[in-house]
Image (tube, rainbow, N blue to C red):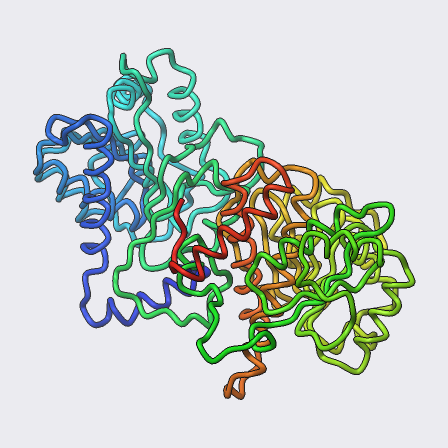
Length: 537
């Protein structure tokens, strides 16, 4: 099910009342971390007893989580080595690890560790002794699992040089696997110690296999640019009461389709199931109209109207006799795939004036945004608007809105940031298409659907996605309009709906190798969701 992401400050604020009430949140986190780590060891070695685990411990509470978890693992027969990288670490956690038999190596530092809550300059470690370095590298190379508990959510970007040099040496040493067939698994505790999205210095930090985070999903962990450093993120509920209104993002996956995909009601009819108008395809690119309309039809909507070229409509109706080649009442309109001719675009816009019908703008229709002084005051301002650009199209849109040259490489370097900026400037919901699609609201909130398969990187795939999104928006708008609820769909509701559409596209992509097969596979996916409630993967 969907998971909301929060700034680290929000999660820390939610911890305070629990801590004041005497709840031992660290014990809960450590138990979960120990259990998860035991499963990783069992998977890798077939058993837990006799495994070797290294804890790279910094000065913060995430080191405490790791040290208590290590003590629990030691009691199950795991050999634990703790490497302290600063002049102090979590005192009680270290005592627990030592009490369970852990070996402790200082690098640098002394056995006299101070108060872990005292502020310290992490870039000014004590003088480094060279003597333990070879021992530390040997222990790392012999390990089955390494905890990155160096710096937590309070850490800065970039690692202190003495830590970065240790990681470099370990990576470059010929004994990094210790004679094993594979290097040790790396688990980042709460957050990886350096989450800078920059490529520079990538070899000087850990590329975790897993990140186990506590209390709530941290916003910084969902940035597509840091996936190489987080690995798979696992969120552990430790009993915090988080307010979803304070979330900055929502992560949705296939399980959300089973819960939220729109299914027909017994008392429903074609209009209550939604009507989408599709203005797609042209005499130059008729195939785009076929792909877009086919995917909309196959999404289980009540009715699809073909609003463009009669030639495209003829092709579409030859495949889907139920499509209506005429304008009329709609719950959403999709326009743009295949660059429909201007005369049909103008007619469609004229029909939309003085209505609040949602609009999805794709491909050629994106050119309508940013041509006026602002979206405010134009026909687009009167309704929900969804934009579906890829990186190149978003670069052109932002170049118009900002009056400067924005390149697609800049977009790809920070997809969330640029999607948020485009949404804020345009006042529209922005769907930045890619391997990791980003859906940004004007207020900065984002929805991140799980990444799609590589098979979706094919000509026509975007047309299929546009048809799905248009149909999903129309279906939910119709359902809201026919319901007794007085609250209209919010921007965040709309972003969630679009996220479901991306998930349908992903699921279809796992069954198809071409855009034509992809549009047909949408029917399989929607059929399973409507009749079975879940997908057969």
